[in-house]
Image (cartoon, rainbow, N blue to C red):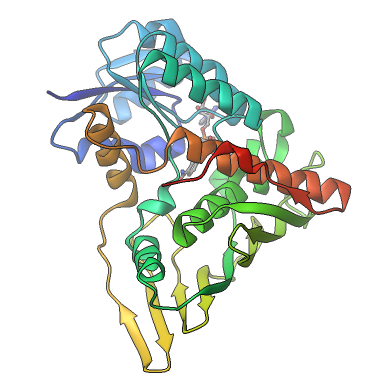
Length: 338
Ligand code: NDP
């Protein structure tokens, strides 16, 4: 049986990655798209070969669909997810799940009560590079993990220089945009949860309205691992990377904080250097594939709703730290990942 998807949001991410990811599944179908503007809905549906275009949430939720993919601006996720859950639809929601972790908890609780699947589209844990690093660490190949470094400062493409840098009310800013991903990827790769963060943010010239376009965080994890992460919208030539350093070795990944299955992972130990191979499956296709598995009751989304709560709680703590100038604890009673 195929999974019929309704897209909530005529967005760039759906157009560039998620429509293809759904269509890459043998059992995936993009049945409808909703935009707040009837003209944009029709144009988007036409450009992307989607049969049904609607401009209201009720119109979309009343259509013949099984699941929704929410990729509107961040302030809309809560209300749209709750409505979809009420209509009995499974929900794959973009990060951040909402503007606050308490709202995210409401979404996850509602989905649980309704018996529908809710997942967070943290694509990076679907990357072969990160999965290989996680496996190498779990297998003890770097000994005891000591420290990690995430390099995730990019240049926001011109076509995306909109609400992210102008609208605090839409959940703009680099922390809700990129730090959430880094918090999730650190949790996933280390198999550990952050307990505390200290963060500095900056406005380096791109973001207005008091929003930040650069951030550096220092994280402490349950196991005692410390990590640093750098997120930015304004650096054109920085490159990305992810390193984990342990007592017996280091993992050094380059060009891996990206939307594509690219980059490299090097393992350096006393025995020398080894390039680790990993699968190159499309990150978003894997996300949808896992979500379909969860709908069939045979697994879980790659990133669950609980994972989305964690990443948003971590980002929220980072923002709080940046404004208070103090380290902020990340509530650990949310539970740990598998
Ligand atoms: P976009 O700015 O492309 O789309 C967001 C909304 O803006 C759309 O829902 C649409 O509203 C409106 N919009 C889009 N184009 C136009 C236009 N030309 N004129 C007027 N309004 C327009 O956002 P993104 O695709 O970059 O991000 C959407 C969500 O996805 C966010 O939550 C973001 O955090 C997340 N994201 C996740 C990524 C990941 O890899 N996991 C990567 C990128 C984004 P309407 O639907 O009403 O037409």
